[in-house]
Length: 364
Image (cartoon, rainbow, N blue to C red; front, side, top):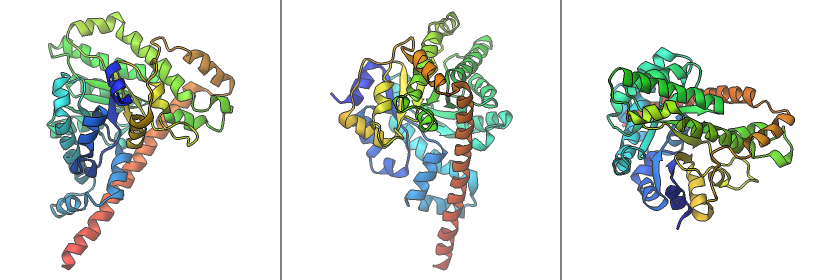
């Protein structure tokens, strides 16, 4: 039995952290669903930026939309929605078979709105309306301005993937925003079933401290933070507050492991996949990591529900001079800035491809 199927059997979903038009048109995504138990897909500005830069799959669509007067964000969202609705349709049987637990794809709200709550809420609602699919999450960053946008969007009935979470504390803030949104729906007599996931970024922790800690501690901080967060997740699911909502028909906001591709060339490619096996969670992984795990990955005993040795290990990092609370804030800020840069690069890329395509057509 493939390791990917073993993860599926213990209750962890594997989602592909990639989207390109080529993945769809070549049948590769369908093959991953059939062969590797892939049950969802995520995207972000960096992924789309790379996809449009590195291949000519989008040139015809960019030309047609530019000729129709589209540009910038409007053009991008048309491209993205074409890809993601096709992926959502491909995953719809999974969505239907699991009662909406799996079979999701994700679309990011503009990172340039990360500090603007009102505009985020408005954009999330518009993207949800345009997607016209029940299995498309809209991604909202779990930043200070994003937290109230998460609550309002959940209350409005929009499925939300909370992104850019780096710590237990940031996760808890996002989870509480989700709970408040559901509680408000129940109070208003609305259906409490609004799906959501909370995405904790893992490998960036280890990149950040690689040159600041002893060799024995390298590539261990991200996993320790994940263990600590998983303990908080299990505590929330066992809480009276959550049980009350579950009894009313609400579904858990599942914890998702993001940024699980190994960044250190000296570490195993499957490091974070093997370490973070756990029921009722999701691991969204890069294509290269998926293939490596399917080939030679191993599934162990899984994460301990109480966090295991997380606190003891984090104490070692504290002694090594790592302030995890401060670093979580820095990583979230850097992540938001990185996505904003990718977004601007993406807009520049679309514009640079539009001009020569139009000139080439006019010259004919």
